[in-house]
Image: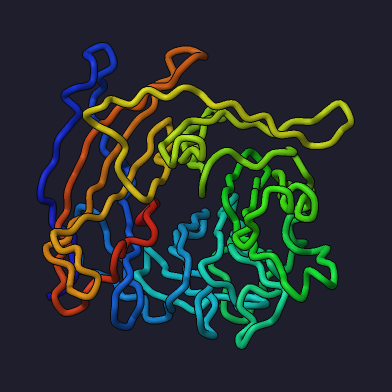
Length: 377
């Protein structure tokens, strides 16, 4: 039986105060999910709210990251990285056809993908200073794929870019023998800057972090116009993972201080008195109705202060058994900033879709690996 998303329920947020209620706005663009399967092909595409069958990505491989790319020439769902030799796959949404894309200089497991103005920036999530069996996450750690002129073909070469200064670029011989386990902890696209902070997974002593590994601390920014990295803040970004843009310099992300609870940040990169780039970041108090918290492991922007969340749930919680009656909960929210003191999240709608596919079980525990909205034609 083909995989499809069947709508099961819909509700609104009746607890929202009358003065804050708005007319429910359904996203103008279709929402796509990339789901992982236990069997090959590893991934497929589902369209939320339609009866369309799944679209298997035959060129995909485990360990890929996915994002949406749009330009005047078309709309694509792009998979990058993985544990084998095919480094990129490009699915043309309009033509409903999959193509092999450009090769990376070195492959990357679950890389960070940042689309911006027709360019796709690919960053190693766990940079390695030693070349492994397949060169996973070895130099170059930062690459660029050009979509400005349309879909890039297999023969094109990704552009190698300078690595972030907080990556292990200046590693010493003693460090090379026991290199730091660095991973990207938080990132965001703010204006023309890619902001980035990292975390050291194999360092437990605060004293060691303060002395030996100080060069990996702070926030750096890549100016996509000037094509240079700069340190823009002495502190790490205060959130986890990606910050989702809401408009008006506001971003939604999971707060470190609040054990992963969602928070809103106002971020801007300007010029300091010395002429260098400088990050200004302020947390905006967030008001969320208790009866309707933000649910979802994946968030993506809808524009005009709106965003969506995707949450996967299943009756069966046994790791080795097939998921029983799995469903996808798709929530749509809007943010209202009534003054400079706080921001209010309002739930607009919530839809539940059952995922039906007995022939190709979904991966456990969270098979939805990417979610986004884009033009279908």
